[in-house]
Length: 223
Image (tube, helix red, strand yellow):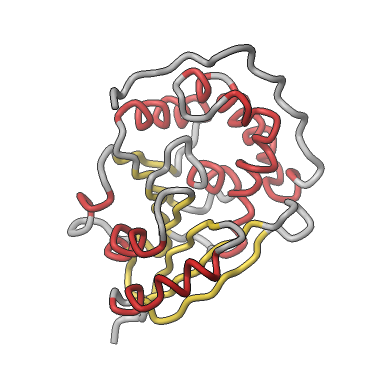
């Protein structure tokens, strides 16, 4: 597949207004979140990161859906977002939580360039882009929290993400209605890969409907 921008097909729908729950998630940075949504609806579409049909639900299905995961992340954590794509969840979390040090891992150069341009446009000082596959960082980088959304099944995610997690750290994988079923199927492999415990959590109750479902994989602390 050629790594080139693709123009949108047909007119792009209007961007929805800032929803009431956004202020509670982003606080004084809600305007910055709105600027990110506007970029997603503009160059995010023209670069093929999202389809035009996603514009009406950019807030609820995408940006807020990801940002509410911040409630699971401790203060001042170093985080990595694997397969970041349009910055979901990584950029949404970095906007909601300026205390986080966020690393976006994206193997496609077109997407990585878009992320770098967007970070510069939003003047985000807590974000770094790595244009590579997660495996390329296995021996050189570790984070307390590794996130992923719509990247791969949990077994594959474990292989990609767990080597990036520092001892006692976590993988937070955003999943849908079949999260428990997927976790059950992957658990024997995940346990062999160093996962000490796993639970499905719901984030953003009362903010997004349905709440965001996250598979929380905790690794054992070093002895």
